[in-house]
Length: 193
Image 1: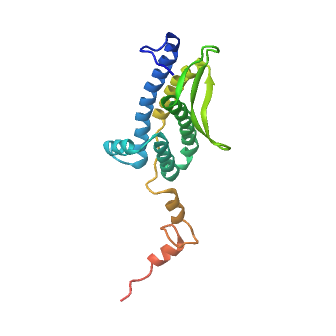
Image 2: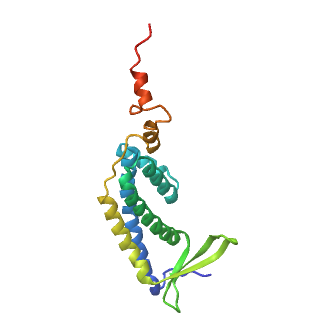
């Protein structure tokens, strides 16, 4: 394999599409960091430290998903899950472009993304190659922009207690929590002398 000093002109539209996508992605991560701040109920700079300390996009997404599943108001969960699913799909595209070889196939004019990938039957599929229309790759920046706008509009309503603790608090079988009759009965006992 040889490399020239300048990329071929045929790659320019792909390079432009990838650049636009990556620029939108950086903005998306900033918006997602503000969601981390809300879900943690933490000060902005502390949330940014946590975000930066996460090793990769998958870990960041998992942290947001777990916090949302635990603390986000239940009526907001379906919409937030859908937003994170969109982010996951775009993140998969971003990671493929960032960590695999890509270019424009001279014969078909399609964008190829080639690299090793996990495979259920073989363990690793060496140099798996996926093909996309250039229009699809160009749309990834637009899709990311639309997602970041939807995320910016989403105002998380966060419970102070976890969903599990809220459920336990009101469980009549456990005898705990202020709304539980057994707890109220214990609270009404006269002090012992």
